[in-house]
Image (cartoon, rainbow, N blue to C red; front, side, top):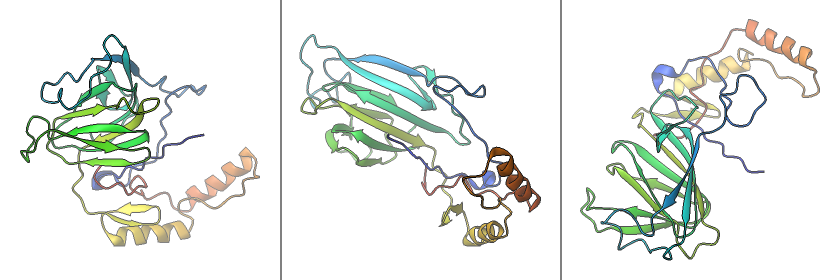
Length: 246
């Protein structure tokens, strides 16, 4: 079993919102939002960008190279993700055949991280004379590595090298920077240390619910939850993450 656990910080104005749950994908729950939007596109024999065609190695002539993009949040290739977010955000799961290339436009002010579930993959940097004026080049990202992209670019270009075995598989995590201070303590993420201290004190008094045994049946578990709610309600934990600028 594999699991991606992505923690997303919330802006100050949303720290105290009520918790909610969104279900997407194959589920029998009537509240589910349906399957994850997915598209498979054919990659050209070489990069479609003239500025990078000399950098990306060409695929064998006549070979079909496929790129599959699953859209969890945001929009890509005309598909809209079904998960909602409180700030502009894009989360994509991309699978590429060896020798394929893929390009995706991003707002220049958004931060972007790439996590390689299976590598290697090559990311084009300074394409078309970036803001640093550098020459186009490739940065290799190996399996389980994360690439942190600087802002200023408007086109993410990725290549799955021919020497890779079985292609590349990775996550694209992009979003508008919050540009707010971050104070984290345990599960709490706020803008000031005093807010985290206050939340922890409320947790200790049972305001967020009381501990329960995993052996409880459903009705006994609901009784514990009802006692917790009478104990004082909830104070938001800010999304429960320490991913800073996503």
